[in-house]
Length: 148
Length: 186
Image (cartoon, rainbow over all chains, first blue to last red; front, side, top):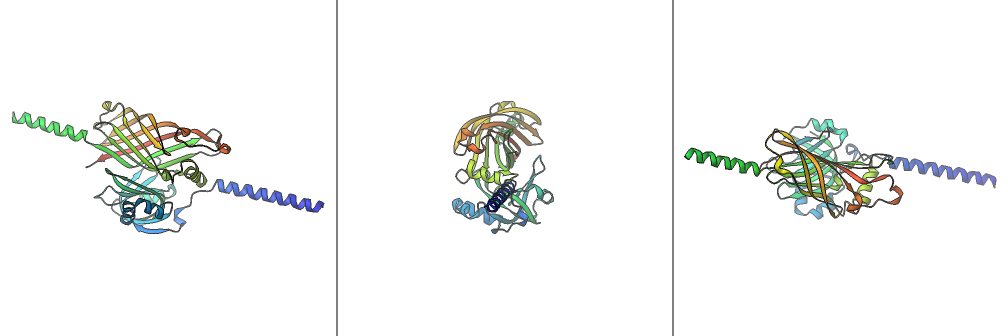
C-alpha cells in the first residue's frame, strides 16, 4: 500500500515537472526560422500579385499564413532606424509590390541586395492591401533571402 | 508685360505642383506595446510594412496595416494576438484616416522640423474611434520623416483581456509610428 502511494507520488511529481517544462518551452517558443522551413508555394511576384488582384478571398484561402517562396526583381530596399529591412519586389513601372519584412537574423543578406537585381525570398503570407493611388501589395513577414 | 505674365503663370504652376504633391511609404513602422509592469516579458509587436500617404496640400493623412504583419519575439504571443485579441482572420486590417491639424505651419518643401498634431479616426478590430496624437515631421532633401506616439485603450476597440492574464497585459497599448515618406510621382 505504502509502495503504491510512493509510486503515485513520483508519477504526480513527474507529470508536474513535465507539464512545467512543456509550458516553459511553449511560452518561450520563437517563431519558425524561414531558412529551415519547407515552402508551401513557389511562385513569382507577378503570379502572386495577380492571384490576389483577381480574387482576394480565394487567394487568402490559398496563401494566407502559408510559407511562400517568391522570385522577383528588387525594386527598393528600406531600412528602419533599428537597422531592420523591408524589401520590395516588383517592377519599376508599377507601384504594386510584394513587400517582404525581413527577419532580423537575416539583415546582413538584405543589406547586400541591389535594386534591379533578381532575388528569391521565403516568408509567411500576411495578406493583401489594394489602393487606387498606391497599387496593390502582398505582404510577406519573417522573410529570409534565399537566392541573389 | 509678356515677361510678367510668364513669371506669374510659372509661379502659379509651381505652386499648384507643390500643393498637389503627395508623399508616401509602404515600409513604415508601427510599434504596438502592451507591456504591463507585471508582464513577465515585453508584449511588443513591430509592423514594418505600414502604408502611409500624406497630402501636402491639405495635410490629409492615411495609414493602413495588416494585423498579421505585426511580429512578436515569441510565437505564442503572436498567436494569441492574432487569434484571441485582434482576431486578424475576421478583421485583417487597421487603418487611420485623418489630417495634420496645423498643416499651414508646415513647409513641406523646405528642410526643417515641425511639431504637428494629427487628428482622425482609427479603425481596428471592427471599431472606429477618434484619435488625436502629437507628432513630428522632419523635412529633409525632399523626403519626410513622420513620427508620432499615442496610447489607445484596448477596450475601446472591443479587445478584451481574459481574467487569467488581465494583470499581465496593459489595458492601454502604446503606439509608436515612424515613416520615411518619399514624394509620390504621379
